[in-house]
Image (cartoon, rainbow, N blue to C red):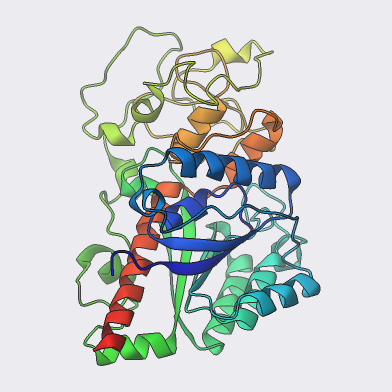
Length: 387
């Protein structure tokens, strides 16, 4: 079943970082739903360039295709929800992460009552209407581990379960999977109970213990999380702050080079797409902040031989290049979000919107790992059905 594909609907699609992870595992995006005009332009341009130059198997074999966003769509609008219900009656899946500002520790903290916080129920309404085989939901950790918001999250999970799904959820950090960004986020996956029952009858185990799902990783598990490469990577031997402009070129004590910002920033040149796009420095602080000083609210300077703090470039939070007196570039932000270089943002999108897009996105590499596990469950289900 290597060539089998699965139709999915993408909600709150942003620039499509999440979508690429699923596309790379044979999921066909039948429609991407987004309301922000500049994000739509980014999605269409970025995915077009990705499909043109990617060497991914499903892309190169034309097993999946790029579906452009042709109109702004408000996922909270009942008429649009009805349209989606009528248009897609046999979906394999729905993926997406509603805007998170109302649940973010550094955001508005409006919770479920906030204008954007309520969008998790727009997501749920579309799930309820379309009843896909599976769903994937991603959001900030504040929805998960803040007492006020956890009540809303638990109610959200119960509502999904009441529609006939088994639900798995955990905080997953892309850093644990070998990529240099500290970005813990909720990952929620659900499958129809009817699908799970078929798999159970076929000998697969229905398990919900996250430690087993992540670290034992048995082939007998009905669903499992991607297996982390590192446990507690933030506790490894990381260098302290260094004076900006130092002559150090390597740090021998660091034995995990893939978790260092240098691994994704070090080889970039002005010839790389989107690399020359950054806000022009206008402050003396660009030369005063030490390399690795990331504890401040703003003007955080990355360290070449440490991982990046959470990519979040809005609300006056400025991240500085480790060795250059400037902010990070668009391509550097995309690299930290593990977006492939074949994905190129159009030049006519304002920088503010590009950095907001990057900050809001799901790391593509993590999305790809989760999509691989979802595909495994679906393939096993179809194999059981054919016996």
